[in-house]
Every structure is written in structure tokens, then in C-alpha cells.
Length: 41
Image 1 (cartoon, rainbow, N blue to C red):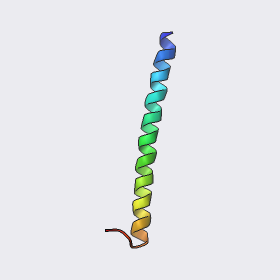
Image 2: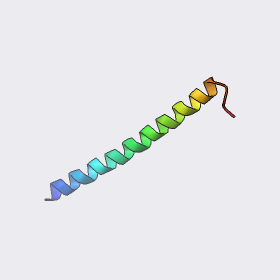
Image 3: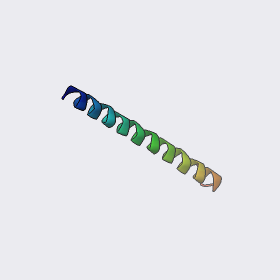
């Protein structure tokens, strides 16, 4: 059905966005921890 295909696309797009968001947050937190420990560049 058209609705099912559309919903699948929305869910997949949402998953990709969330993955990118979590990766960004993880990178920022890692950078902050390194900075706090004095290991930053």
C-alpha cells in the first residue's frame, strides 16, 4: 500500500537523522571530556 511505503520512508529518514544527531552529541561530549582532562589540542 502507498501509506505503508510512505511510513517506511518517514521512519527510515527519522532513524538516519537520529543516528547523525547522536553521533554529533557523542563527538561533542568526547571533545569536552578531552578538554576538561587537559588532553585537547
